Image 1 (cartoon, rainbow, N blue to C red):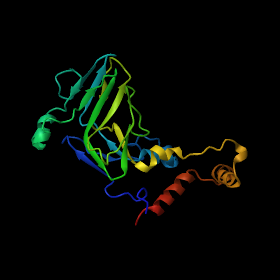
Image 2 (cartoon, rainbow, N blue to C red; image 1 turned 180 degrees about the vertical axis):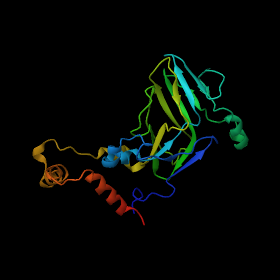
Image 3 (cartoon, rainbow, N blue to C red; image 1 turned 180 degrees about the horizontal axis):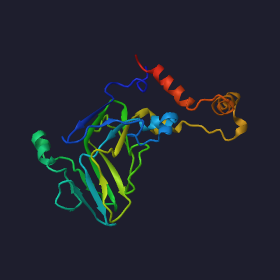
Image 4 (cartoon, rainbow, N blue to C red; image 1 turned 45 degrees about the vertical axis):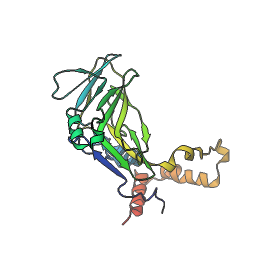
Length: 255
């Protein structure tokens, strides 16, 4: 059986380095209740994309502020705002050194780092991840979730089957002189498994049909079933695609 359709178990393992981190959880098809009910019930593509992967949470609630040049940060219980170059998670360096082998002491990863590009900040989730052989991890902002207008997240694909390092993201701050808040109980990342055979050279295999006159009989028949037939049926029920997709998914599920 193709390993892409039957991945090994577990597909992913999260290693919680920061002990106070909220554990990751399966992404929610309803986007934590924020997806409109009509979209959740009838738009299966949106619901499927929303639930694909796992939510990852900030290791604590904190805030960033950018003046166009420098970044400062603070967190719950802090005495004030601190200039950001590279910052350890509070009290984590000692915790890391107490657990790490002697040769690795002093190498705890930073929690926050201001990169050399203006307004770019790297945030560590407090987690390290390992995926099954042949599987990578797409790191992105939560799908279909209303985003914080104060920053944009960069996306990246990491080959976490061989790279055992901090699960982090880079963000670009888009507002100045305004606190940008991160809530430890609100996901700021969604990580999604991607088989390594599906990116790179595999994406060179595509085709384009340049004109309607080149559609074949099977193509027009598929269009009729998908678009025309439902719209001329006076007894059409809404969400037929969603019902059919969920039924097929249930039939394919292992016993």
